Image (cartoon, rainbow, N blue to C red; front, top):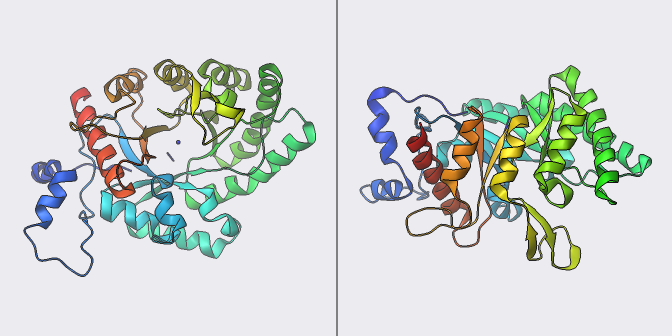
Length: 330
Protein backbone atom coordinates (compact mmCIF):
# COMPACT_ATOMS: atom_id res chain seq x y z
CA UNK A 1 0.00 0.00 0.00
CA UNK A 2 5.16 9.97 0.23
CA UNK A 3 2.74 6.86 1.57
CA UNK A 4 0.75 15.10 6.24
CA UNK A 5 -0.73 15.02 9.65
CA UNK A 6 -0.40 18.42 11.37
CA UNK A 7 -0.43 19.45 15.01
CA UNK A 8 -3.66 20.52 16.66
CA UNK A 9 -4.11 23.86 18.29
CA UNK A 10 -4.31 22.93 21.96
CA UNK A 11 -7.63 24.48 22.69
CA UNK A 12 -9.25 22.65 19.77
CA UNK A 13 -7.94 19.26 20.86
CA UNK A 14 -11.12 18.17 22.59
CA UNK A 15 -13.21 19.16 19.60
CA UNK A 16 -10.95 17.24 17.24
CA UNK A 17 -11.10 14.11 19.34
CA UNK A 18 -14.87 14.35 19.28
CA UNK A 19 -14.99 14.18 15.51
CA UNK A 20 -15.20 10.47 14.82
CA UNK A 21 -17.34 8.25 12.68
CA UNK A 22 -20.23 8.75 15.09
CA UNK A 23 -19.28 12.26 16.08
CA UNK A 24 -19.49 13.60 12.56
CA UNK A 25 -23.03 12.29 12.20
CA UNK A 26 -24.02 13.64 15.59
CA UNK A 27 -22.75 17.10 14.72
CA UNK A 28 -24.64 17.11 11.44
CA UNK A 29 -27.94 16.22 13.06
CA UNK A 30 -27.96 19.55 14.89
CA UNK A 31 -27.74 21.59 11.70
CA UNK A 32 -30.05 22.12 8.78
CA UNK A 33 -28.73 20.16 5.80
CA UNK A 34 -27.00 22.09 3.06
CA UNK A 35 -27.18 21.19 -0.63
CA UNK A 36 -24.41 18.60 -0.07
CA UNK A 37 -25.29 16.59 3.04
CA UNK A 38 -22.12 14.47 2.95
CA UNK A 39 -20.30 14.75 6.30
CA UNK A 40 -17.48 17.26 6.02
CA UNK A 41 -14.55 17.99 8.28
CA UNK A 42 -13.16 21.48 8.66
CA UNK A 43 -9.81 21.76 6.95
CA UNK A 44 -7.94 22.69 10.11
CA UNK A 45 -8.96 19.41 11.76
CA UNK A 46 -6.35 16.67 11.46
CA UNK A 47 -4.91 13.66 13.19
CA UNK A 48 -4.32 14.21 16.93
CA UNK A 49 -0.76 15.38 17.51
CA UNK A 50 -0.02 12.74 20.14
CA UNK A 51 0.08 9.87 17.61
CA UNK A 52 3.57 8.51 16.92
CA UNK A 53 2.74 8.35 13.20
CA UNK A 54 0.92 10.43 10.61
CA UNK A 55 -2.09 9.30 8.60
CA UNK A 56 -2.40 9.38 4.82
CA UNK A 57 -5.08 8.18 2.42
CA UNK A 58 -4.41 5.69 -0.35
CA UNK A 59 -6.43 6.51 -3.45
CA UNK A 60 -7.38 2.85 -3.87
CA UNK A 61 -9.69 3.26 -0.86
CA UNK A 62 -11.94 5.23 -3.23
CA UNK A 63 -11.42 3.15 -6.37
CA UNK A 64 -15.10 2.29 -6.79
CA UNK A 65 -16.15 5.93 -6.66
CA UNK A 66 -13.30 6.92 -8.98
CA UNK A 67 -14.09 4.24 -11.56
CA UNK A 68 -17.77 5.20 -11.40
CA UNK A 69 -16.80 8.85 -11.99
CA UNK A 70 -18.47 9.83 -8.72
CA UNK A 71 -15.15 11.44 -7.76
CA UNK A 72 -12.82 13.14 -10.21
CA UNK A 73 -9.17 12.18 -9.83
CA UNK A 74 -8.25 15.87 -9.70
CA UNK A 75 -10.45 16.26 -6.61
CA UNK A 76 -8.73 13.52 -4.63
CA UNK A 77 -6.67 15.93 -2.52
CA UNK A 78 -9.74 18.00 -1.74
CA UNK A 79 -11.75 14.92 -0.76
CA UNK A 80 -8.97 13.64 1.49
CA UNK A 81 -8.76 16.92 3.38
CA UNK A 82 -12.35 18.13 3.54
CA UNK A 83 -14.13 14.81 4.08
CA UNK A 84 -11.57 12.94 6.13
CA UNK A 85 -9.26 15.52 7.69
CA UNK A 86 -6.25 13.83 6.05
CA UNK A 87 -3.45 15.87 4.54
CA UNK A 88 -1.21 13.20 3.01
CA UNK A 89 -2.22 11.27 -0.13
CA UNK A 90 -1.02 8.28 -2.13
CA UNK A 91 -2.00 8.24 -5.80
CA UNK A 92 -2.73 5.18 -7.95
CA UNK A 93 -1.25 5.46 -11.43
CA UNK A 94 -4.18 3.93 -13.32
CA UNK A 95 -6.36 6.95 -12.52
CA UNK A 96 -4.15 9.28 -14.55
CA UNK A 97 -2.19 7.00 -16.86
CA UNK A 98 -3.00 9.12 -19.92
CA UNK A 99 -1.63 12.23 -18.20
CA UNK A 100 1.66 10.96 -16.79
CA UNK A 101 3.66 13.13 -19.18
CA UNK A 102 1.16 16.01 -19.30
CA UNK A 103 2.77 18.77 -17.26
CA UNK A 104 -0.35 20.91 -17.45
CA UNK A 105 -2.41 18.15 -15.87
CA UNK A 106 0.26 17.33 -13.29
CA UNK A 107 0.51 21.00 -12.42
CA UNK A 108 -3.24 21.08 -11.79
CA UNK A 109 -2.90 18.04 -9.49
CA UNK A 110 -0.11 19.78 -7.63
CA UNK A 111 -2.00 23.07 -7.41
CA UNK A 112 -5.11 21.46 -5.98
CA UNK A 113 -3.08 19.57 -3.39
CA UNK A 114 -1.23 22.75 -2.43
CA UNK A 115 -4.47 24.75 -2.25
CA UNK A 116 -5.80 22.34 0.38
CA UNK A 117 -2.57 21.97 2.30
CA UNK A 118 -2.20 18.36 1.21
CA UNK A 119 1.13 16.62 0.61
CA UNK A 120 1.52 14.21 -2.31
CA UNK A 121 3.49 11.24 -0.99
CA UNK A 122 3.54 8.27 -3.34
CA UNK A 123 2.40 7.06 -6.74
CA UNK A 124 1.36 3.40 -6.65
CA UNK A 125 2.49 2.02 -10.00
CA UNK A 126 0.92 -1.07 -11.57
CA UNK A 127 0.64 -2.42 -15.10
CA UNK A 128 4.08 -1.39 -16.34
CA UNK A 129 5.64 -4.83 -16.61
CA UNK A 130 7.54 -7.14 -14.30
CA UNK A 131 10.61 -5.64 -12.67
CA UNK A 132 11.55 -9.16 -11.60
CA UNK A 133 11.06 -10.96 -14.91
CA UNK A 134 14.01 -13.34 -15.50
CA UNK A 135 13.88 -12.51 -19.22
CA UNK A 136 16.34 -9.63 -19.69
CA UNK A 137 14.39 -7.93 -22.46
CA UNK A 138 11.08 -7.99 -20.55
CA UNK A 139 12.69 -6.79 -17.33
CA UNK A 140 14.65 -3.96 -18.92
CA UNK A 141 11.55 -2.76 -20.74
CA UNK A 142 9.66 -2.76 -17.45
CA UNK A 143 12.41 -0.70 -15.85
CA UNK A 144 12.18 1.88 -18.63
CA UNK A 145 8.37 1.89 -18.40
CA UNK A 146 8.66 3.07 -14.81
CA UNK A 147 10.93 6.05 -15.58
CA UNK A 148 8.00 8.30 -16.47
CA UNK A 149 6.37 7.59 -13.12
CA UNK A 150 9.53 8.52 -11.27
CA UNK A 151 9.53 11.80 -13.20
CA UNK A 152 5.84 12.44 -12.47
CA UNK A 153 6.28 11.68 -8.76
CA UNK A 154 9.19 14.10 -8.61
CA UNK A 155 7.11 16.80 -10.31
CA UNK A 156 4.25 16.31 -7.84
CA UNK A 157 6.55 16.46 -4.82
CA UNK A 158 6.23 12.80 -3.84
CA UNK A 159 9.02 10.95 -2.06
CA UNK A 160 8.51 7.55 -3.73
CA UNK A 161 6.91 5.40 -6.33
CA UNK A 162 5.54 2.05 -5.14
CA UNK A 163 6.38 -0.79 -7.51
CA UNK A 164 5.92 -4.56 -7.70
CA UNK A 165 8.54 -7.29 -7.85
CA UNK A 166 6.60 -9.65 -10.13
CA UNK A 167 8.21 -12.26 -12.32
CA UNK A 168 7.67 -15.78 -13.66
CA UNK A 169 9.97 -18.59 -12.64
CA UNK A 170 11.60 -20.11 -9.59
CA UNK A 171 12.04 -18.18 -6.36
CA UNK A 172 15.77 -17.96 -6.97
CA UNK A 173 15.48 -16.80 -10.60
CA UNK A 174 12.85 -14.16 -9.79
CA UNK A 175 14.84 -12.92 -6.82
CA UNK A 176 17.96 -12.52 -8.93
CA UNK A 177 15.92 -10.63 -11.55
CA UNK A 178 14.32 -8.44 -8.88
CA UNK A 179 17.71 -7.39 -7.56
CA UNK A 180 18.72 -6.34 -11.06
CA UNK A 181 15.45 -4.66 -12.08
CA UNK A 182 14.84 -2.80 -8.85
CA UNK A 183 18.49 -1.85 -8.68
CA UNK A 184 18.43 -0.31 -12.16
CA UNK A 185 15.25 1.62 -11.44
CA UNK A 186 16.73 2.86 -8.16
CA UNK A 187 19.81 4.03 -10.06
CA UNK A 188 17.53 6.16 -12.24
CA UNK A 189 15.57 7.53 -9.29
CA UNK A 190 18.47 8.33 -6.97
CA UNK A 191 19.76 11.51 -8.70
CA UNK A 192 16.19 12.84 -8.60
CA UNK A 193 16.01 12.30 -4.86
CA UNK A 194 13.28 9.69 -5.36
CA UNK A 195 12.72 6.34 -3.66
CA UNK A 196 11.62 3.06 -5.20
CA UNK A 197 9.59 1.11 -2.65
CA UNK A 198 8.28 -2.42 -2.98
CA UNK A 199 5.03 -3.62 -1.44
CA UNK A 200 4.23 -7.16 -0.39
CA UNK A 201 1.71 -7.51 -3.18
CA UNK A 202 1.30 -11.15 -4.07
CA UNK A 203 3.53 -13.93 -5.35
CA UNK A 204 7.04 -14.10 -3.96
CA UNK A 205 6.80 -10.52 -2.70
CA UNK A 206 4.30 -11.66 -0.05
CA UNK A 207 7.04 -13.76 1.52
CA UNK A 208 8.68 -11.37 3.97
CA UNK A 209 12.00 -13.19 4.04
CA UNK A 210 12.20 -13.34 0.25
CA UNK A 211 11.59 -9.61 -0.11
CA UNK A 212 13.96 -8.59 2.68
CA UNK A 213 16.67 -10.73 1.07
CA UNK A 214 16.11 -8.73 -2.12
CA UNK A 215 16.48 -5.47 -0.18
CA UNK A 216 19.70 -6.58 1.51
CA UNK A 217 21.25 -7.64 -1.77
CA UNK A 218 20.27 -4.43 -3.59
CA UNK A 219 21.63 -2.39 -0.69
CA UNK A 220 20.62 1.00 -2.07
CA UNK A 221 19.55 3.77 0.26
CA UNK A 222 16.66 4.81 -2.00
CA UNK A 223 15.25 1.30 -2.45
CA UNK A 224 12.96 0.18 0.35
CA UNK A 225 9.68 -1.45 1.27
CA UNK A 226 6.05 -0.53 1.84
CA UNK A 227 4.78 -3.09 4.37
CA UNK A 228 1.05 -3.72 3.87
CA UNK A 229 -0.80 -5.24 6.83
CA UNK A 230 -2.94 -7.46 4.63
CA UNK A 231 -1.19 -8.54 1.42
CA UNK A 232 0.50 -11.75 2.52
CA UNK A 233 -1.26 -14.31 0.33
CA UNK A 234 1.28 -16.74 -1.14
CA UNK A 235 -1.09 -18.94 -3.11
CA UNK A 236 -4.66 -18.68 -4.43
CA UNK A 237 -7.09 -21.20 -5.85
CA UNK A 238 -6.20 -21.81 -9.49
CA UNK A 239 -2.76 -20.24 -9.09
CA UNK A 240 -4.00 -16.78 -10.06
CA UNK A 241 -2.49 -13.60 -8.68
CA UNK A 242 -5.72 -11.84 -7.62
CA UNK A 243 -9.39 -12.44 -6.96
CA UNK A 244 -9.51 -16.12 -6.01
CA UNK A 245 -9.59 -17.39 -2.44
CA UNK A 246 -6.25 -17.44 -0.65
CA UNK A 247 -5.22 -20.96 0.36
CA UNK A 248 -1.74 -20.23 1.71
CA UNK A 249 -0.74 -17.14 3.65
CA UNK A 250 2.52 -15.90 5.11
CA UNK A 251 2.40 -14.88 8.77
CA UNK A 252 1.39 -11.23 8.43
CA UNK A 253 2.91 -10.13 11.74
CA UNK A 254 6.21 -11.82 10.99
CA UNK A 255 6.14 -10.34 7.49
CA UNK A 256 5.61 -6.76 8.65
CA UNK A 257 8.36 -7.17 11.23
CA UNK A 258 10.75 -8.41 8.54
CA UNK A 259 9.90 -5.56 6.15
CA UNK A 260 9.93 -2.68 8.66
CA UNK A 261 13.74 -2.16 8.71
CA UNK A 262 13.48 -1.08 5.06
CA UNK A 263 10.12 0.73 5.29
CA UNK A 264 9.69 4.19 3.80
CA UNK A 265 5.88 3.99 4.09
CA UNK A 266 3.31 1.68 5.70
CA UNK A 267 -0.12 0.60 4.42
CA UNK A 268 -2.98 0.06 6.88
CA UNK A 269 -5.17 -2.44 5.02
CA UNK A 270 -8.69 -3.03 6.35
CA UNK A 271 -11.49 -5.31 5.23
CA UNK A 272 -14.13 -5.36 7.95
CA UNK A 273 -14.89 -4.23 11.50
CA UNK A 274 -16.63 -5.67 14.55
CA UNK A 275 -19.09 -3.82 16.78
CA UNK A 276 -16.22 -2.33 18.79
CA UNK A 277 -14.57 -0.90 15.66
CA UNK A 278 -11.71 -3.40 15.55
CA UNK A 279 -10.53 -4.91 12.26
CA UNK A 280 -11.82 -8.48 12.08
CA UNK A 281 -8.84 -10.08 10.30
CA UNK A 282 -5.86 -8.05 11.56
CA UNK A 283 -4.84 -7.32 15.14
CA UNK A 284 -4.12 -3.60 14.80
CA UNK A 285 -2.67 -3.30 18.30
CA UNK A 286 -0.10 -5.96 17.48
CA UNK A 287 0.64 -4.45 14.07
CA UNK A 288 1.13 -0.93 15.37
CA UNK A 289 3.32 -2.20 18.20
CA UNK A 290 5.57 -3.77 15.56
CA UNK A 291 5.66 -0.54 13.55
CA UNK A 292 6.41 1.51 16.65
CA UNK A 293 9.18 -0.85 17.76
CA UNK A 294 11.20 0.25 14.72
CA UNK A 295 10.82 3.91 15.76
CA UNK A 296 8.81 4.58 12.61
CA UNK A 297 7.16 7.99 12.73
CA UNK A 298 6.20 8.49 9.10
CA UNK A 299 2.89 8.05 7.29
CA UNK A 300 0.57 5.09 7.62
CA UNK A 301 -1.79 5.03 4.65
CA UNK A 302 -5.44 4.03 4.94
CA UNK A 303 -6.34 1.41 2.35
CA UNK A 304 -9.85 0.10 2.89
CA UNK A 305 -10.81 -2.81 0.62
CA UNK A 306 -13.86 -4.24 2.35
CA UNK A 307 -17.42 -4.88 1.25
CA UNK A 308 -19.12 -4.62 4.65
CA UNK A 309 -19.02 -0.82 4.70
CA UNK A 310 -19.12 1.74 1.94
CA UNK A 311 -15.80 3.23 0.91
CA UNK A 312 -16.64 6.40 2.82
CA UNK A 313 -17.58 4.52 5.99
CA UNK A 314 -14.59 2.19 5.68
CA UNK A 315 -12.13 5.07 5.46
CA UNK A 316 -13.66 6.74 8.52
CA UNK A 317 -13.64 3.46 10.46
CA UNK A 318 -10.00 2.80 9.58
CA UNK A 319 -8.98 6.31 10.58
CA UNK A 320 -10.84 5.99 13.87
CA UNK A 321 -9.13 2.65 14.59
CA UNK A 322 -5.67 4.03 13.79
CA UNK A 323 -6.28 7.00 16.06
CA UNK A 324 -7.62 4.83 18.88
CA UNK A 325 -4.69 2.40 18.85
CA UNK A 326 -2.21 5.17 18.13
CA UNK A 327 -3.30 7.04 21.25
CA UNK A 328 -2.94 3.89 23.32
CA UNK A 329 0.65 3.50 22.20
CA UNK A 330 1.69 7.16 22.26
